[in-house]
Length: 382
Image (cartoon, rainbow, N blue to C red; front, side, top):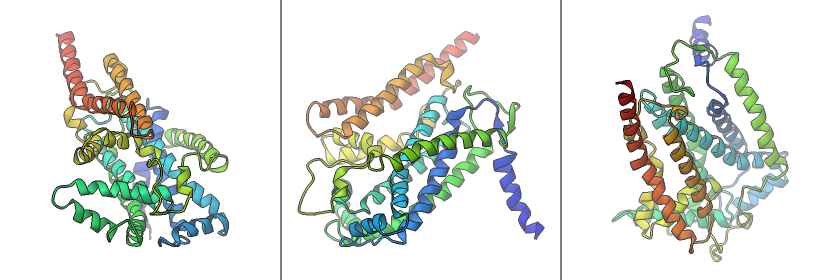
């Protein structure tokens, strides 16, 4: 029995207790741990909700009401799961922008970054198909708009859309497929997250100074485990505020109306965490071009380790980079605002300008800035 148990204990000890951690990392590094907690919360609440949910267009909306009104603590499960998706994206966005700020994508941690972007993409797919399941007005029409984008693919686009729908419109077959995928994908996310963690622990965590801290590390327990759980305590307080006092604040009011294919909402918008990408999609006056731009806005992050070559990772020693970083972060907030606005002027024009800057930042500013900084370092040394 001891022989069988030892490998499990060893893995747990190596990755959670004795794991050497840079002594100078601060609370910005808590959000990787918090994202894992969010994933666990979503899986647990999702499993219990699936026990009472009915994936049928005539019963889905009613089954949600049944969960809210008739199941013991069903309202709590539903609100935790619905708001948990928003909390998950808040945590992951902070985690992502922290990586951009401190250069966590630079070799040798480039594959950690790549798997992180893959996790983010899987999150987007999982959240989108989950948004369809309540079968409200935004669920139906959001699914119709987004799945129709695939029809822009030359030659095979319409066939793919029919396959996604399981018919000729978003209907019962679509809801069944989305429910099955929404139940499956979180477990795929767990697998990719474990891979992400394993690759991270191969080279160790980055640190705020961006230097090699291999000789200045301490064990994760108790120092950083205590810090992580303190961050978790504040996160639970923040999360609980939405659950108990404003559970519907982050949702769209039209999604509390049962889906009706005969009535189109005045303004179709996705959830708030999709709005920047939705703004980029709308900014291109061509269907296929908009789809390519939207997908490229995500996967350009994958190429970042190969686009940017710098010898200084941390922005603390890069004042010019800090200026452009904060302008980029501002542009992302503007895109989120534009994504929720009507498709009319001046929002179209603003969205186009900011979308251009989004890609300009990655394709031109970061590579040129990296070369300039590397040149200045060599010039200063010599």
